[in-house]
Image (cartoon, rainbow, N blue to C red; front, side):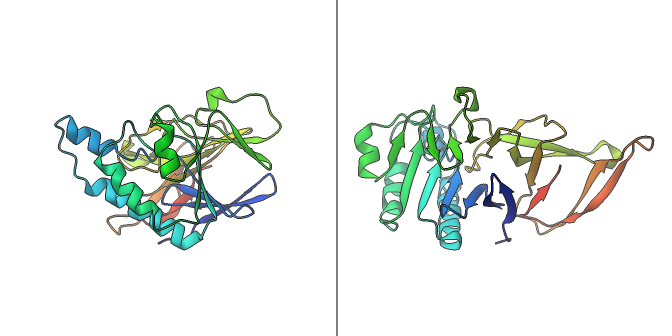
Length: 245
């Protein structure tokens, strides 16, 4: 696994993982969003052939992050599950038994519609609306945030950034977005799409390169006037977090 990318904000140390989550060092908390566990099962139930290995790989990635960072709790910024209970969520309950001392705080998302008894059985604390811890607040949809002096972490949007190179090639990657007053996390679940964001010059954006393939990619940026031609800003490998701006 590639080392996490360090990022400080509001005097707090964060570590951005290429596996689409953030470790908050001071709170020993792993922040992630939009896992959509159970989604592949709903597609199969509807007759769409999506292999269960997609779901199992997401659970395995989460296991690896827990073993690597050793957090005391997970802060899930919405959409931990996709919809109603299915057989895939039975697998989650078995997975949960391996971490009885790991707290899970779920900030309720629009897809989190399971009965409260199921969350209790899975030892998950559900927080409707906004959860505030220290200098940060957590809300699923940033559109539901209220005026606050804290910095917000949100999900819901599944942000992606388009990188354009020479010859009009372009690729879109999931990304971490940090604006002036809030951040948007990438979707942890791989069975999700991305929505292109349009950051302001002062915002910070970190692209996540996929872990497969083993190849290295050259990253380009637009040169300042008068050149106006893309220029290389270096090479980066697979499964890494790369700062775009």
